[in-house]
Structure formats: structure tokens, C-alpha cells
Image 1 (cartoon, rainbow, N blue to C red):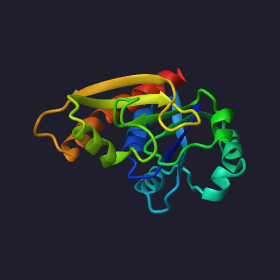
Image 2 (tube, rainbow, N blue to C red):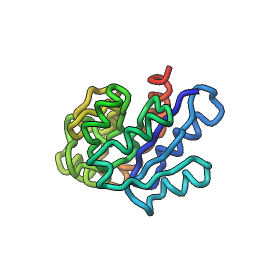
Image 3 (cartoon, one colour):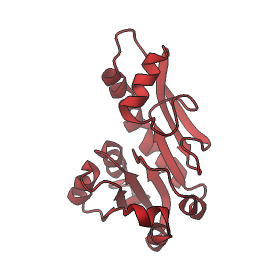
Length: 187
């Protein structure tokens, strides 16, 4: 059984889809959920699903190897960033090189980087007059939204789209593809 560690900062809808996907697969399980926000919805999911949860201490995350050791002790095979808003420190990237992935709610390299998350991304995409948006699932390196692309899926942008309607379209793609890509990488 492979072990997945999920890092998330928000409601955890992608985390829930991954948990559901692997619930009876025999291939993998979510063994821990880590969040940088003590009030994040993803921690409620962890509690309901009886998955160990950790609220990240910022100082320890960016200085030291507390979380590298924790993930190693748990036998983590894949680290999944599912709406995690902090840049991953170099020691964690190096310890899990090629085994940390992220999902971004736009077609990278456009609309990525520091501060480009959630509604900020969708507002920027619409302001730029783009005809399509989508998701990018990519490997994580030491820069924001810069690692090698694993998958991009697209959706059309209609003239009447708003940041909210675009967010819903993009989330449909996230929920459809993220668990499948996690499974593919674990196989």
C-alpha cells in the first residue's frame, strides 16, 4: 500500500476527491493531511475520514527538517499539494525529488507564480481576454508553479463567464483529473 501525504490550505475539495478515489483501491491511501491553517476545511475532512492531520508550524517548515522526517517516517511515496499556498522549502523538494506534485487552476506558464491562486488566477485570466483556461498538474521544484508539466486540461471561456463561473469549470477538471494522475504516478 502506497502512502500519500496531502498539503492543503483551504476547504480540501481536491483532498476529498483523492481520498474517495483511493478509499477501496488497495493501491494507496492518504496517510496524513498537513495544513498551514488551523481553521482550514481540509482538517475537518481529515477528522471525518480518520486521517492523521498536522497543522504546520511556519518556523519549523521553513527552517529545519521536521516535516521531511515526518513524511519519511510515514513512508510517504507521493506528496500532493492540493491548494497549498506556501512555497515548498528546498530541503523538502530535495528529499522528495520527483515525488511532489501540485495542481494549478490555469494553463501554466501563464497565470502562475506568487500570489496567483484561487480567484486571483481566474480574474487575471478573464482580464487578459483568454479564450480558454484549465488546469495544470505539475511536479514541484524550488520555484512557484515552475516544475515539469504532467498534464494540462482545458475548458472554454465564454463571454458571460465570471471569475466564479470559471472557477467552477476549472474545479470540475481538477476533481476529474487530479485523482487519476495521482494513481498513474503511484503505479
